[in-house]
Each structure stands twice: as structure tokens, then as C-alpha cells.
Image (cartoon, rainbow, N blue to C red; front, side):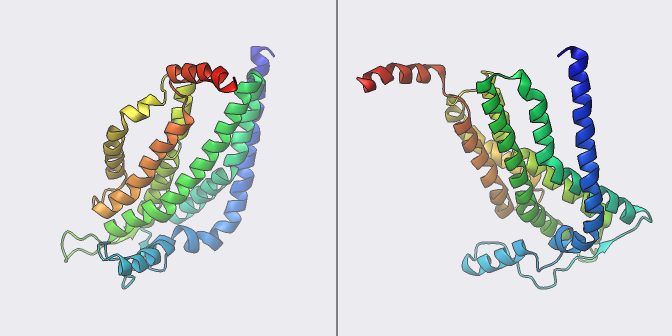
Length: 271
């Protein structure tokens, strides 16, 4: 194919992706009013599953923060006439984009696969599937753990008892989407290291050498993600970030000397 043929194929790939996003956004436009309170606004209520879980856990582990469900029901205010409508549109588009991610990955894969060798195509296909799966897991961690913990801390924090905390709809939605998206991107860390390994920039010894640094880096990243700063929230966010580091150590290539030693041992084992 010529350059212009590739450009034409890329154009149709974008068109198909945009159409898919719009179709699922229309679906979101229909279903969002029915799930908005039960899903998106769920963390504002004490009935949210994360709060109930930690409330039960705090009865067995007294060192955990108090997650008592009493008197925790945050009212969301709208102070702008157009905010509710714009939130409806943006949430529908976000719903459409999230549901279309598997199809987007498929289209990208279909576009680049003809340029790859067979052994390269297998690795890239696995990477796309793994990356999509990890992004969804990251979003779920953001929704069920990171956002509820940060939201509950910030909404219950008081500089003075004479100040009542009230939250606007646009503030809630901005933090909701931002934190969930950030966690989805953070969970792409193994895929990033895999790509760097494919380029020959990182090998497995890198993770052994900088493991202690990774622990500190995970704490710093958790502190940036969780502004509360309390030890419990830091630990809750640090653990999955560090686990991602350890997972990355398994997906990168071994050091060249290690590979050569294994190849030298193979004939001896065979004999």
C-alpha cells in the first residue's frame, strides 16, 4: 500500500471508531438517568459498598479509621443553570467511550497488524488485550477504592466548625472522572515497561536494582493521588501501585547474559 492508501485506511479507522463512540453514547444518553444516582452518585451515601466493607473491617481491626455510616449523606448542589445538562452530555460521552474501548483496541490492532511479522503480531495482540484489561481494572480500583476514600476524607474535613462543607455538581464530577481516569492510566504501567523492554531500554535486572526506590516512588505517587495524607489511604493506594511494579518485572525481557546462559545450559540438559 502507498502512503495515501495507508492514510485512507487510517481515516476510515477513525470514522468507524467515532461512529462506535457515538452509538454507545446514545445508549448512554438513554441509560444514564436510570443509573446516575445508583452508580455515579453512590459514593456520596453511607450505603456505598466500600464504606460498608471498611465499617465491618474496622470492627475487627481497631487501628483502621472510623468508617461509621452515621450521618454521612452528602447533598450535591447545582449552582449553574447549564451544569446538569452538560453533565448529562459529558457522562453519556464518557459512557460511550468506556464501552467502546475494546472495539477501539480492535480497530487499532487491525490497522497496525499488517505491518508486523507473525511473532511480532502475537506479542502486540497480547499487549493490546492486557492493556485494555488493566485499564478496566484500574478504573474499578479508582471507583471502588481511591475516589470514595478521597471523597469521604475531603467532604468530612473541617478547618473550622463554623464552616459547612457543600459540594457542587461540577466539582464532584470533575474529581470523579479525573481520579478514575488517573487510576486507569496508572494500571497501564506494566504495558509501558513491556514496550520499553521491546525497545531494549529496560531489562529484568532494572527491577531488582531499583526495588527499594520503587517502594518510595509508590508512596510518593500514592501521596499525589490521595491528598488526604492519612496512613490508611496511603497504604490502600500504595499497595496496588507497587504490585504493578512487581507485575512489570515479569513482563519485561531478561538480561541478555541471562538468556545466553540459559541457551548454553539447554544442550547439557538435553544430553
